[in-house]
Image (cartoon, rainbow, N blue to C red; front, side, top):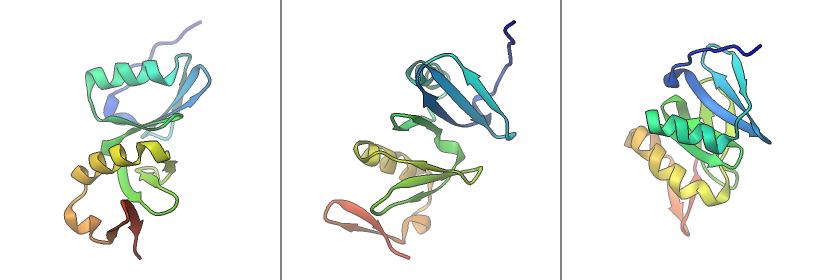
Length: 122
């Protein structure tokens, strides 16, 4: 028996792919598993509300749920549930440009440009 549940897009923190299944991580600490690939979920979510960003082959994040962006040798985004989501090397520029618009300049003041890479300075 299939169950049908309505989920608001702003309740989705991120989506994680595993084969042909996608796990939705929700803000109420629940998860939903869908038998659809992440590419399909991405097209559905971005047609409704273009705040979802593919930061890795396995991850689709809701940029409105991002708390911070950590740069350096290993890049990751900290989400509203305090989970760290990896950013693939080839997606770094896209993720940086999208998330830079979300955070204020003061939140980005600790980041420096070095040889076309961004390094986090503590």
